[in-house]
Length: 83
Image (cartoon, rainbow, N blue to C red):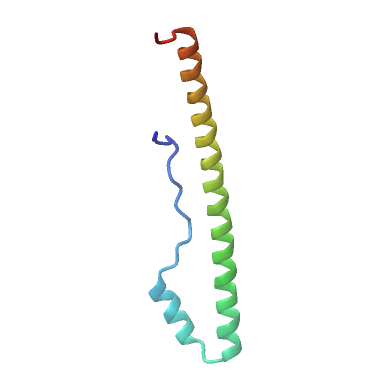
């Protein structure tokens, strides 16, 4: 398999788990904890969907490249048949 030459982009905000758990523990009110957890879940959903879209884009590019390379091999065999 070939490698893609585009650099991998890391998420700009990758919160550490320890700081997140400390933030939850600091909240005394149950409603505040729930709101904080819902906000974090929404952030994770956004990150997941953007990563999923990026993977889909990479897969489409790989598929296109694979199809293109396969076509070249068939064309060469057609021009220079073995036998």
